[in-house]
Length: 340
Length: 221
Image (tube, rainbow over all chains, first blue to last red; front, side, top):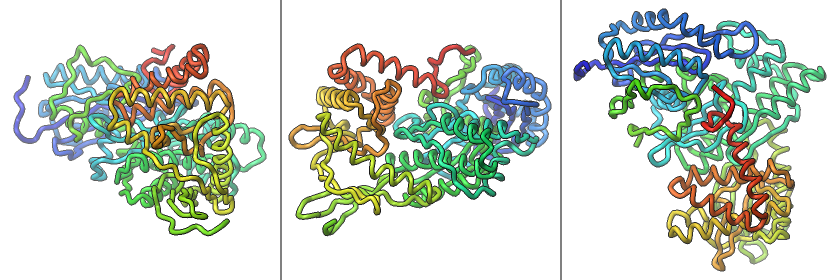
């Protein structure tokens, strides 16, 4: 193994849990030198795991090359390779893991398996300066309220069925909205919702600190097909109802834990309306509100690189033999010695 | 509604603020569901109205199921305020931290019996956490906070209810969550019988499997 130099240590992170293949390079101080990504956009329907994995394999060398170019770092200067080891879609995760293993073996540097959900929290803390927040993490695949409590991150509340981003995406597809390369479905729904005026009564399902979104989605789709309401009003009502639910559970977790910071992250964090709602409850409980910028709220390699650094600096590396991907890796199971 | 004297904020919860006050010479708790600015007015009013009416109904029904709850004195729908008995005691959440293993497991067993009684009567609490249970000086455990409750005997609802209890134990009392939850289930079986308890446990497993990223989920790569 190469000897560590005292300064200028770099870690490269590979993200490939779902439709994005991303590469980030971070210094040990948390300066992000590169964050490149290529998104797989299905022609129709949702993510097909095998197709997405094929996309990742095809673009991997380009995305890597771009990251090296942007950062001005040579592969030989890296100290560790981090990769998202889970949770996520099997074929996509395996593609990223394979790339990471090849790089680590070739360069003869340690491999660090990173939990994708924890990476979202850590990059959020890095960017916003939050120390010990309640995190609402909302994306296409995840909807959870998490915080650190004695040795581990813990999930206080989460969806009992589908994720918030998934709920909005499926509705958008049913409504015949088209996803363009730079405009995600969520943004299309947000735009339509802004023009909505009438709030339609829809199922509101909060169970303790958990919530359920599948009934809300089905009810909204049924109303869509009945054709009685405008698409704007439907988008508005869907958003307001779903966001009120996640905000209520976040507020519950906030009151329950008495934390003084709230962090909003994940792809849906880009939604201005949701940002406003979470900001309101943060203020009401005298907590500091922080939202992750779009670049780092979406799935990205930088968050994997940074979390890889945190783990590596605390002596936590992943031998190749233990680097199999973990499709359903809960964040409670991860040791996080860097958080105190 | 009679004069309420010197209300003092006890706890600002997520959903409502609790005040300790004097009302007709009694110590009472005033639970007020304040408007939530983050959500649309219409949705906010619907939610607050529904919960303000629903909660006291379930609380008085729980008494018929022999589950101690604070007595409701007055419901002021217009101001979404409930005035109820002040129960002098300690939160189970706090007790769990200081109690011995035996005490904790005895309390868990009792909690399980009470949940069993609620479910047998057809009441789902909807937010079973150790912060919503109070032990009084006579050793009675009071259940509070029925705002998310409902009336049903469906297996699914019973499963979710106990799943929430389990989750609350895991996130707040992780060190002894497992022991406590199995004591809860023992108490629950005493009331509803082993067969029903087993069905509910199977349901809980089903509910957990439905969730995102659960290792035990079947039928996948």
